[in-house]
Amino acid sequence: MGLAYFAADFIVQPCGEWIFLEANPSGQWAWANSPDLPLATEISRTLEDWCQT
Image 1: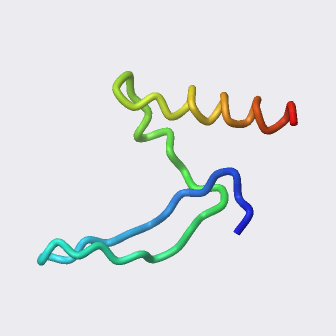
Image 2: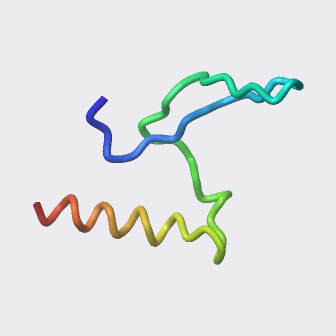
């Protein structure tokens, strides 16, 4: 797909099987940002690296 970032949507069936629904090129992630999972920091670093190349 050539995307530097995307958010994937899945559903999990009662049996535990994960089913892929879609990839969102501008998906939301801020709700999952926490000290244990610093998404904002990692996305910022990735964008900085990407812009410098």
